[in-house]
Structure formats: structure tokens, C-alpha cells
Image (tube, rainbow, N blue to C red; front, side):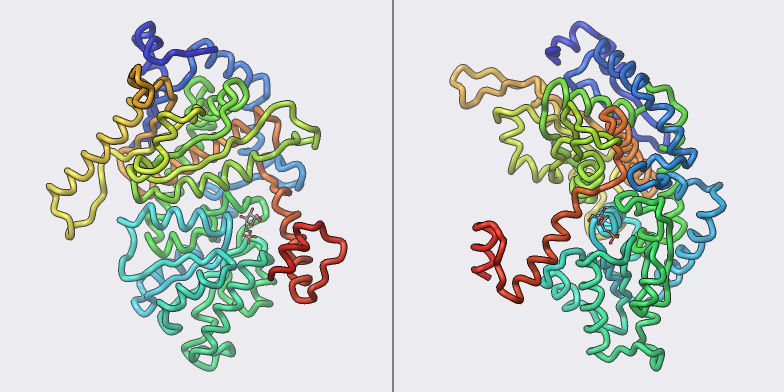
Length: 499
Ligand code: F6P
């Protein structure tokens, strides 16, 4: 199927209306324009039929019902429960960590909050805290240490003082090597700089360290008393709604965190109750499948035209590629089709001055996903109101122009200035970037990944592909100490010999 976008708009005057929709999130909304994509009504219809045949609705309902749809690990997939206000098991745990978050938030003695975690225990909180900067308590600084590269920890500790720092050790399993090493280093720094670990002073680990984990005994064994638990039915990359979101809650406060959850819940309701043809996460997920399997696109660019959303591409890399980057189906049988595309990107307009050249004139067609915000949320102060409006108008003009340029192209016989055009893009527009709309946006992406995962027949909730490297790293680390290279391939042995 070869859609010519400009012709498609000519022949279907209702194309924009048909391929765009709004999802109400309380009084706000998320709007999505899919009309500049290489798809027509017939193909969309066929994709929806395919989704129905794949049992998408039944599988979605099974997730909401709490069935053990993470079949390889024998677990339910319950992140949607974390934002369901009627869930009696979740509520007291939520109340407890939000009460703690609010107490820390109001405590002006704590000026630095350091979240130590990696993967889902870092990317979601780091993304959301940055995204919601306009709603945060600016009397504190929020740091995220994820990498085992000691430079990262060093750079953060350089800015902190033990008496005014709270360390959050965020790890679902409380076994992740990077996080454990970083936590150990943070504690050693704390003790070396006047801290105590036996309750003998006000500067004690009991008040300056807390843990968020499903493995409370391991956190206690590490010497942390203030622990906030969650459940093994919350996947790491789906965990920012749990106590893993503690840094977010400290930054924006318990009330706003509840709004964040309620935005996600509104998207859950949309996903759960809307017919497939009008179901936004479903439409996005089906388009992903179409692009990957029919048009053979290998990647998707994510271009948030909002500095606050700058970490969205990194967040989505884990969500999408750790969930669906698989080559066997849920029963372990090899898949006949390609799965998760490479997701990559950078905030606009910065990307325009880097890789957009390739998006417009490169040999590969790469669908672009623009995410923009209609109304900015500046605080009063440094930039006057008129300048704020100018900045925002320029930003929005650029995002619209890029989508337009990709589609319409520009003919030039000379070659170098020729733009082929007909390059697809999706346009997501938030009324405003608030805790509520951010929650809804993230849930939109989660359900989209669920949809494509179902069509590919994947279990989107395990991640065995991360294990082999972890195991080998332990062996290599021992060999780095012993110098023993026996049994290694020549390249690995050669590299070891250099270190
Ligand atoms: O290595 C991958 C992974 O297991 C992710 O799925 C997870 O988000 C991350 O590591 C961190 O795990 P944990 O929260 O258990 O430290």
C-alpha cells in the first residue's frame, strides 16, 4: 500500500477529522493527529479486524482483571491498579508514602533529594520530575544517580551535605548491581562525613536514607529502616506509579501526585471502554505494527517540542524496547515478523539543528512523533509574560512547520535542495503539561505498547534479554582482578589485556 499524503487529503476531505481525536482527561485533553501517516481508512479497518482476531480486547480485560498475563514469570500485570482510586490494597501504601513525601517536602532542612536507581527505578522518576518542574518545590534539588560510573555519584555528592540530603534507594529487587554499589558508596560518604548508623545522632542513616522496593527484608538487611514497599505484579518499567515515584511525590507533593495518578486512570478508562476504532492507544499501537511489518520501518523518532519532556525518548526506549524487543512469542516460539522498532529522539527545536537533515533528506523513511504543549506553564518571574508568549509561539510554529515540511516536501531539479516529502508524522498535543496530563500521556504509551505486543503475540512484561550481560559482567570483573583470560575469545581476551 502506497499512500500519497497530499493526494489522500485531496481525495478525502474528512481525512483530518477521521484520523484525529481527543481524549478528555478531566477538564483537559490530549489531542492526537494521525492524519499525516501512511495509512488510509481501508488499512485502518483491516488493522482493527486484525486486533480483534488477536483477542486484544480479551487480553486487555485479562490485564485489568488481574490474570497472570505475564506468563513466563507467572505474574499478574497490575500497574493499572496503582492508579485506581478504588483499589483497597494499594490505597494504604500510597497514603503512607505520600505522607512521608509531604513531610520531606515541607522540611526545609532537606535541600537535596538523591534518587539512586536504574532502569525503571530511574527513568520514570527522572523524566517526570523534569517534566513537572513548574510544579516542584524549588527549595530542593533533585538528583538521579543511575550509572555505576562513579563520576556520576561523585558529581552529585560534590553538591550535597549529609545533614541536608535524603537518599532514596529505589530498586524493585534490591539486588541490582549498579544500585547496590551506588547505595553503598552513598552510605560510606555519609558516614565519612559525620553521619551515624546506630541512631546515636540526628545525622543518622535512619533519617537520611529510605528505600522503595518489593524486597523490604533486603533493604532492612542493608540497614535502611524507612522502607516503602510495592508488589511483584508491578513491572520495573511500569513502576513510577508506585513508591518508586517517591522522588516525584516529594517534588510535586502528594496532592499533585494523586492528580498524576488520576490522569493515568482516565487514560486507563479510555483504553478499557472505548471501541477499538476510537481507542487512541490502540490506534497508535496498530500504526506501529503496520509501520514495522508492512512498510518495514526500523525506527521511530520521538520529538517532544517541550524542554520539560526532554527525557521522554529515553523513558520510551525502556518502555517500548524492553517490553517488545523480543523475537519469540509468549510461548517461546520464534516470531515470523519483526517487532519493536528502535525508538530515539531529542527535544525540539534542538533536533532540527542535528538529525532532522536525515529525517527530511536521508535514504530511510523514519516516522516522527511530535509531542507539543498548547499552553505553557511558566512561573512568574524571570521571563516577562510577553517574552514567554513569543518563545512559545516560535516553538509551536516550528513543530507545525516540521510536520508540514516532512509531508509536503519541495521539488528541486538540482538534487541537493530536493525534499521528497510524503514523510509520515504523528502529532500529539497536550492542552497543558500538568501532573494530570503527564500521567495520561505515559499511560497512553503504556497501552500502546500493550497493543502492539498483543498483535505480535509477545509477553511484553518480562525482560530475559538483560540477563546474559549481567552474568558475564560478574565473570569479567573477576577476570579483571585475576588477569585470567583462559577460554575467552580473542577479542574479549585482547580487551581484558588492555585494562
Ligand atoms: O536490567 C533490567 C531491569 O531489570 C529493568 O527491568 C528494571 O527496571 C531495572 O533493571 C532496575 O531493576 P530494580 O528496580 O530491581 O533495581
